[in-house]
Image 1 (tube, rainbow, N blue to C red):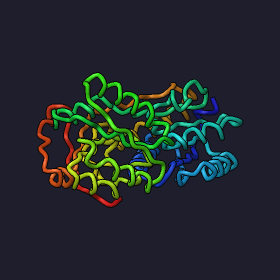
Image 2 (image 1 turned 90 degrees about the horizontal axis):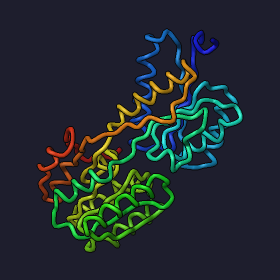
Image 3 (image 1 turned 135 degrees about the horizontal axis):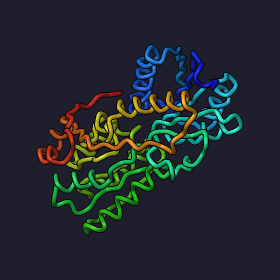
Image 4 (image 1 turned 180 degrees about the horizontal axis):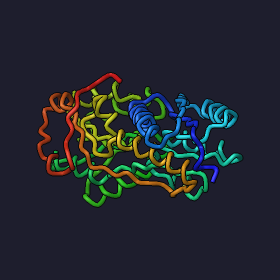
Length: 303
């Protein structure tokens, strides 16, 4: 068939925004595409686009990609995935997203030319870590953005789990960094710990809010290691380099076979702890070593 005799592919990688986790996924995708070129005896050309978290920018990028005749689009982030799926509909250009936490919620399932990787957060494990570290936890701050489609289902899971344990919670939301900073200020003194899902709006503000929370003695448990590298206390989840590698493999599989699985879930129980933050909080996290497959220790970095 025509698909098998191709000797080159054009790949468009579209990041929703410039963001630590998304950049890690992109780097892994590119590394894997490079690694597999020789093995598959093909030339793989790729271009990296940044949507700046702006729907109109993403729409323009999508139109350019379709006009330039790319063979596959790899959007990173839910909004980017939704935009590329819509843009690619007339041409049925393959879309292989990496990563969308809740593909069903994002309405990205059951589309014949769309597939990708999912990294749904293990909310219960993250809250179990919180309660193991501080069994006296009485009130949990739920900090998230109402504009992030991934956050709502995780917040619902968190509320149900906390309700089942008889633990109270205080919800605070914001849709800009300034609003997130204000939400955190209004929370200190009222909560014992804070939970945030894989929320890009909060992640963008993490460097600003982490010192406030740590100095107030409030551990921040968040949905990805990018938060922890920017000062949150701890997370559990997938390794984004593994996720990017699997996304690249899925894109090449789609190009070579023309077959689209609905999506592939990459689960993870790697625990990441920020040792700088742990020191500021003055808390012991040795109990985590019994809870996940491994405990990775990181320090705060600015990127």
